[in-house]
Length: 310
Image (cartoon, rainbow, N blue to C red):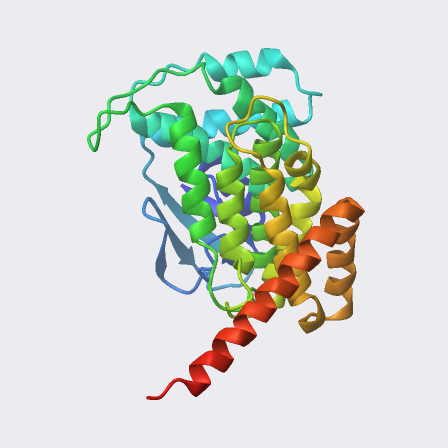
């Protein structure tokens, strides 16, 4: 069909599941004269009128059953986020007839798409994930004997999304996406959908864990501060019955931030001070003693290595 450019954003958002803003797609592909492929299943051809006027685009979309599942899930999730958590909408989402692992993955992708696009309602999407956790069928795995469940797909998607974070300096849009992802992962942890070791690995990937590691980029330290502000109380005050205490994890990363503090600009130093304020005073005394012992051990090791004959 021929789509007028003035209606293009609405058409694509409603049909293809991605966005166009000022001629740039969500995947940072420019529209140009001729044809270009957007993702794997959408092609747009620009039609330039000889007499001037509106540019028209010819839009080709090849949709799969998984696309239909994801689109239906996106619509229901949007309704859920603005409905004050109406469980009837989640019942409609849970009643979708999923017949394959790919369709289960499409539902999880829809949850992540909404959580990253609408971080203001991140808690609502995490709540939806909690309530949907046991509502979908399991599917056999081609890799191992463990069944593929909603929870397993969710965990894998958390890891995959986080691993997409660029190693270079983040652009504003990339930084916003990382903040939204960390907020959603944090909300999943707060609602007991993720284990403490998962959030610990996220923090380790952001800022490292030891003073011997390289100083991470300021953007990542800032993200780690925001993340710890969100989940710190739960780490310091875990629910009874956990297999392993979570306080040491909080201590570990607070200690790491303290090592990084004076290498950061003032606004990040202030954020680190906010993290420090979360810990009881006695905890900081123990951490400071541990820091001094590590520093003394590290200095002694360097001195010993300097006098050992080659």
